[in-house]
Image (cartoon, rainbow, N blue to C red; front, side):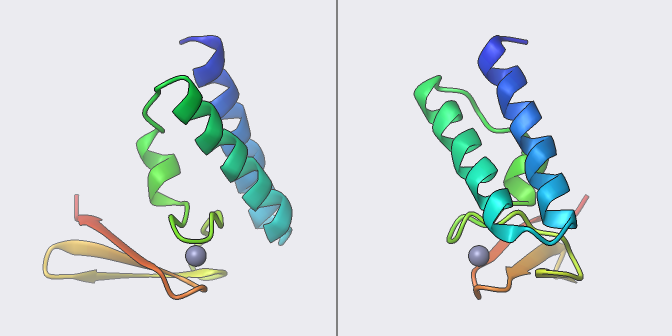
Length: 91
Ligand SMILES: [Zn+2]
Protein backbone atom coordinates (compact mmCIF):
# COMPACT_ATOMS: atom_id res chain seq x y z
CA UNK A 1 0.00 0.00 0.00
CA UNK A 2 1.34 3.44 -0.89
CA UNK A 3 1.72 6.33 1.49
CA UNK A 4 -1.40 8.08 0.17
CA UNK A 5 -3.51 4.95 0.57
CA UNK A 6 -2.25 4.55 4.12
CA UNK A 7 -3.12 8.14 4.93
CA UNK A 8 -6.60 7.63 3.50
CA UNK A 9 -7.02 4.58 5.72
CA UNK A 10 -5.89 6.59 8.72
CA UNK A 11 -8.28 9.44 7.88
CA UNK A 12 -11.09 6.93 7.49
CA UNK A 13 -10.38 5.66 11.02
CA UNK A 14 -10.26 9.17 12.41
CA UNK A 15 -13.51 10.13 10.68
CA UNK A 16 -15.27 7.07 12.04
CA UNK A 17 -14.01 7.72 15.53
CA UNK A 18 -15.02 11.41 15.42
CA UNK A 19 -18.48 10.51 14.11
CA UNK A 20 -18.95 7.93 16.87
CA UNK A 21 -18.02 10.55 19.41
CA UNK A 22 -20.66 12.85 17.93
CA UNK A 23 -18.18 15.33 16.46
CA UNK A 24 -19.65 15.56 12.98
CA UNK A 25 -17.68 18.63 11.96
CA UNK A 26 -14.37 16.97 12.70
CA UNK A 27 -15.53 13.81 10.93
CA UNK A 28 -16.39 15.89 7.85
CA UNK A 29 -12.95 17.43 7.81
CA UNK A 30 -11.34 14.00 7.74
CA UNK A 31 -13.73 12.79 5.05
CA UNK A 32 -12.89 15.81 2.88
CA UNK A 33 -9.17 15.37 3.40
CA UNK A 34 -9.39 11.72 2.41
CA UNK A 35 -11.41 12.55 -0.71
CA UNK A 36 -8.89 15.22 -1.72
CA UNK A 37 -5.99 12.83 -1.21
CA UNK A 38 -7.66 10.17 -3.31
CA UNK A 39 -8.35 12.66 -6.07
CA UNK A 40 -4.86 14.07 -6.11
CA UNK A 41 -3.32 10.61 -6.20
CA UNK A 42 -5.90 9.09 -8.53
CA UNK A 43 -6.78 6.48 -5.96
CA UNK A 44 -10.10 4.79 -5.54
CA UNK A 45 -11.54 5.29 -2.07
CA UNK A 46 -12.07 2.05 -0.15
CA UNK A 47 -15.56 0.63 -0.53
CA UNK A 48 -16.35 0.97 3.15
CA UNK A 49 -15.36 4.62 2.99
CA UNK A 50 -17.66 5.24 0.03
CA UNK A 51 -20.55 3.48 1.74
CA UNK A 52 -20.31 5.28 5.02
CA UNK A 53 -19.80 8.79 3.73
CA UNK A 54 -22.38 11.13 2.27
CA UNK A 55 -21.59 12.41 -1.23
CA UNK A 56 -23.69 15.51 -0.68
CA UNK A 57 -22.44 16.82 2.68
CA UNK A 58 -19.33 14.69 3.38
CA UNK A 59 -20.73 13.43 6.68
CA UNK A 60 -19.37 10.17 8.03
CA UNK A 61 -22.49 8.07 8.45
CA UNK A 62 -23.29 6.06 11.53
CA UNK A 63 -26.53 4.15 10.93
CA UNK A 64 -29.00 4.88 13.69
CA UNK A 65 -27.29 8.13 14.58
CA UNK A 66 -27.03 10.33 11.50
CA UNK A 67 -28.21 7.92 8.81
CA UNK A 68 -30.98 5.45 8.15
CA UNK A 69 -30.34 2.20 6.37
CA UNK A 70 -33.06 0.25 4.64
CA UNK A 71 -33.13 -2.59 2.20
CA UNK A 72 -35.36 -2.33 -0.80
CA UNK A 73 -35.61 -4.44 -3.94
CA UNK A 74 -32.25 -6.07 -3.40
CA UNK A 75 -30.61 -2.74 -2.65
CA UNK A 76 -29.38 -1.11 0.49
CA UNK A 77 -30.58 2.46 0.69
CA UNK A 78 -28.68 4.78 3.00
CA UNK A 79 -30.31 8.11 3.84
CA UNK A 80 -28.15 10.79 5.40
CA UNK A 81 -29.63 13.29 7.84
CA UNK A 82 -29.12 15.93 5.10
CA UNK A 83 -31.63 14.04 2.95
CA UNK A 84 -29.22 12.63 0.39
CA UNK A 85 -29.63 8.97 -0.45
CA UNK A 86 -27.19 6.46 -1.82
CA UNK A 87 -27.90 2.92 -2.82
CA UNK A 88 -25.89 -0.11 -3.62
CA UNK A 89 -26.65 -3.76 -4.29
CA UNK A 90 -27.33 -5.90 -1.26
CA UNK A 91 -24.67 -8.50 -0.51
ZN1 LIG B 1 -25.46 14.17 3.82
